Image (cartoon, one colour):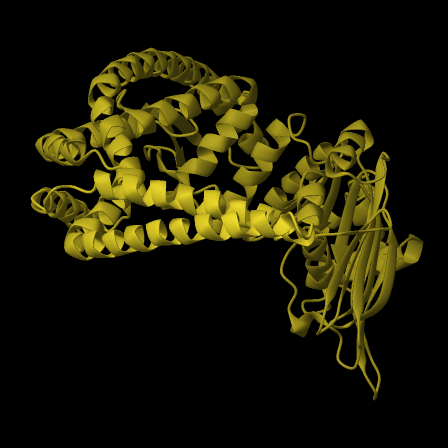
Amino acid sequence: MLKELSIKNLVLIDEVSLNLDKGFIVFTGETGAGKSLVIKAIRLLLGDRFSQDYLKPGAKEGEVEAVIWGGELLYQRLKELGYSETEEVHVIRSFSPKKQKVFINGELASLTELSYLTKDFILLTSQHEFYTLLHPEKQLELLDEFINLSPLLKPYREALSQYKEISSQVLSLEKKLEDLMLKKDFLTFQIKELEDLNPNPEEEEELKEKREKLKNLTFLREQLSLVSNLLEETTSNLHQTLSSFEKLSDLDKTFKFYAERTLGFYYEIKEMLREVQAYFKELPEDNSELDQIEARLSQYERLKKKYQKDTQGLQKLLKELKEELKLLDCGKEDYEDLKKKREVLADEVIKLAEHLTFKRKEGASVLTNLLKEELKELGMEKVEILIEVITKSFDPKNFSPYGLDEVKILFSSNPGIPPRPLEKVASGGELSRFFLATQSIIKDKQTAKTVIFDEVDVGIGGLTAKKVGEKLKRLSENTQVLCITHLPQIAALADHHFLVEKVSTQEETKAMVKLLKGEERLKEIARMLGHPDHIELAFQFLKERA
């Protein structure tokens, strides 16, 4: 329930604070007085986009503030959003040309959160909402809300989601398998080509080193022979030097140190000579193996260039290609398993969809009779209504979040004329009454505890207006009802009556909103009756409707 509403610097409104109570509340005033500004302020609380035109000329910042009571449901919703948990919430939306801010219970919030929070507790209706009833999906939602189909829609949607996910996997794997079948021969060729090479970075490096040796075999032999001879000559010289140092050490111990160092050189050179001679012996007799090595390295280069990868990359590619080919065998098994799962889920989705259809057809008959009764109370005595539940074929492409059904409301307000689709025959006034009838029927099933009617009196008057007012009055017994109206028949039934009027001075024009009581209310009812000075007429008018 909307308990308080404050508006600052909104177009013509300077500052307005309203305390709103339970029951039936009306806002009246001359055309152009600013009644729509109250609606505009509430729309801002519901998350509508802000336009700079909304800001009062000369003002730097505007603000809409409200206190909304929502009981335990609001407490849970605030908890879900992560805000301080209360059964009533204080919200503020401030706006300026440069920035906008939202506060929920004093904490900075987002516009999305504000919209999500308030829309479940305030339902604002206007001619636009009346016309949404012309859309088949809205007619379906109306029927579902009436029969409280949400508990059945949840398992259906979960099953449908699983079915779609499995179907997506089936199609994806199917395409993969088709692609693999088309390139199976090519994959096999690539694998054989890489297996023949058996790429190995260490082998490639060894081959390159061996190729360099074979290309320079003569040079290697010559140089190694020369080195071998020089080392042999060096060892011989070192041996003679060692002998001389040993003789000198008998005379002077200093030479014993030189003899020891020379002996170390001797053994080191001797070992070097042995390794050089061993390397020489291992050299091939000729370079006849060079062609084979070149051919092998050429194979490496060709495949590296072909696949744009180094040798390590070729190893990885071979593994990937084998796994891809293996997928053909494993994939076929997975594919068959997935298809079986899809069939089971399809059966479950169809079964749940059939149950939705059954409940809708069952509920459509009840809703039809209730709508007829409500519309007769609203002055449409001869109305004929037929709610058709049209079920599509059990084809996966026909599944929607709502099942397989479409709902079409057929309507006729004239005797002898068969019912036709609502969107083709209903006038604006008939639509407004039809909407009010639906709200009266589902009032106990919806979350909103405040319902705001703007333009509900479009296209009606006289006795029909009185009946619409009576319907709004009854609706307000369980739900706070706010109504913008030009009709005295409706305003006379209000529990609380606010007047919106324009006040002009030489400097500015302002819209004012005030609660009417006593003689002030009589004057406004008299104005609406067309006799501004006939207070007695207004008194009698109110008395007749008391």
